[in-house]
Image (tube, rainbow, N blue to C red; front, side, top):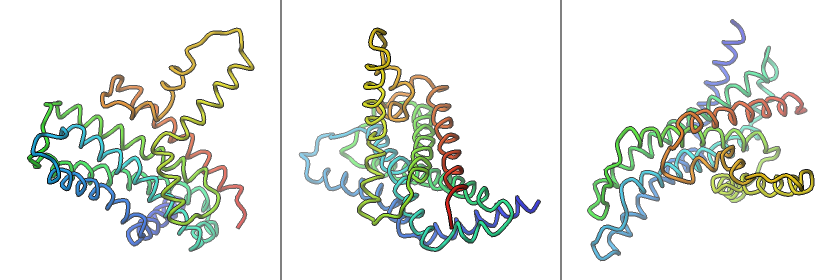
Length: 255
């Protein structure tokens, strides 16, 4: 019972910190800035349709739950270190485990809120006269939003699990952008290709296809959700592995 109470208290404290954090507020502003750019582009165009609602929807989901969640999470992690969040949590029973669990849950809340906010803003794009509609079924759009939410959650936990020092806003923005644009995928692709070449030079394999199928970035490169099971299960696998890494690093971290 004390463990659950501790987790609730830590989650409450994390939510309180997030509700007042500038990085979180900035993450919610970013999709709105994309809508503002779309409106400006509409007025600068010749009046013909210049994009589709589906593309605008996909773009907002890339900016919101994908990039925005990583950006907000890295900023929160920096402020959390400055405020001694881990030091305060470690004083209670199971404090470090509760600290990790509360932060992972907080990232999930942020990803959910940013996905819903991005979907809501897409209705503004739908109302613009320069936006056409392809007629994609609502179920497909909902599934796309779910996948982007899961990928954003996993990406953000990966970011905080791999980050050991606080950075300024510029560095935070850059790291989140690189992760959202698939920098981790590119590095893994390069390392894997080199390793495969030296370890198994005589074996032919569709290495790039295998890596793409196992990468999070491969799930967001196209609009279509071709394999719902893989598209939903793979982010959860990455989320579990990133959470375990985050817990292992937190358990070893000195105060």
